[in-house]
Length: 82
Image 1 (tube, rainbow, N blue to C red):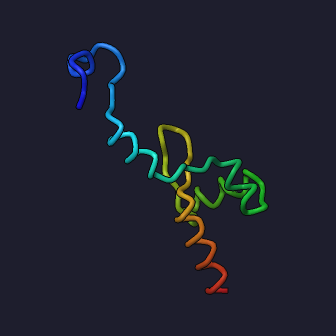
Image 2: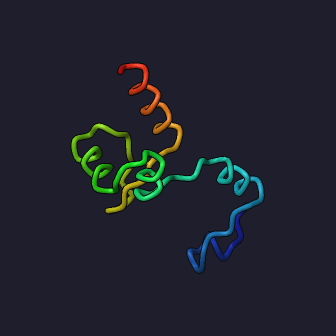
Image 3: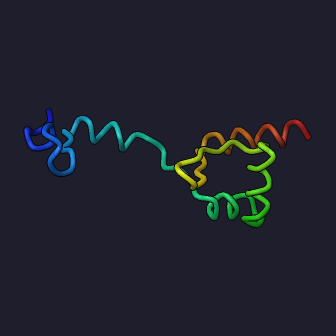
């Protein structure tokens, strides 16, 4: 349930504990430096993979973000495919 204040647009929205628990269930997104460290490559290499659409990513504005489960699948596919 949302408060009257949030419904009127004044101030930040108020969310219920049930709504908050749904947001906590979402996996955190990884940043470019985190992905570079995970893959043991430079940030420039990750940017190249993104530019050539070789690695799954999301754009949030101008920022790159990566879903951990997508990256694990991507790495696994590379290992199996040789």
